[in-house]
Image (cartoon, rainbow, N blue to C red):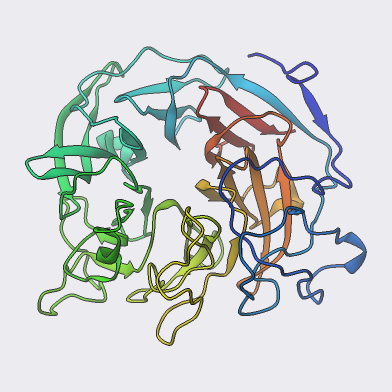
Length: 419
């Protein structure tokens, strides 16, 4: 296991952290200064961590929706570069024995051991289209993996009319060298000629069904599909392990509506996580120039894209009519302007660092840090930025079996954050 030295090994005593941003690209967060101080000691609140000017002059819908006050972890924790040599890792999941199964964008999987050793590539995975933002994306193991060894993954799939986000499954061989009997169980229609905005995260619903997130493929032509209920683009979907609509989905039985749709009006969802106490599903999605969002997902709800947004076009013009609120459309719980480009997310449920209990952690790409959000009563009351000196694009973050956080980066590193 490699230890960080100077820029490699960092012992964080992070009182006072979080006044400087190391975001690099787009951003989304409006001028919102203070959050409700009723749920946290005001002595522990710092200035908002975002100090750059926003891209817009939009006003938030409620106090604390953006630029909430900063917080600082008081526990002395250690960050180590736990593994290296991964090839553009994208998603990861825990194996029952504490090892971590990782996908790589070009179409391979590897296993990282509890000591940080990286396995050889696992074969047997069908080809992916890895151009642009495509490739082998997220991964999840079956709830009964210890008995059936079934693995699920999402990927960008070539089709006759373009590409699409798809979900496949297969059995991890006993010797862990290959995936056996791989089959595609779901394809998000329609296919579209784009290499952008595939989503896609996988999350179990607690009843043996999979939540699957998709993007709206980015193009002006495909963007409106996020509002259309006969298309699987720009959606959170809920399917069975055979790829069928899950029982109890909100639109089952309605004409000209895809019954697998759970929520809609999303731009590009790359984060899904279940709250460890309430069981609620939360997501994070990319905004345009500003307007990255964190949402609490409720069945059948419309999250607004592209009708409402707290961001603007990359050219500087408004999104649609330039409005941020509309009746019948959900407001984000939190947003950033400028953006942090949130990818994978996880709630912390361990006891290694008790002050992080039930906090939401997000991997920031253009932000080049890990975001920590303190949430109470479905509102963000504090924000912290971790690992911002590493100058890495963080792609996913996961709570390991040992109670530490693990984060992977586009450059092929895996970090461990814990005691």
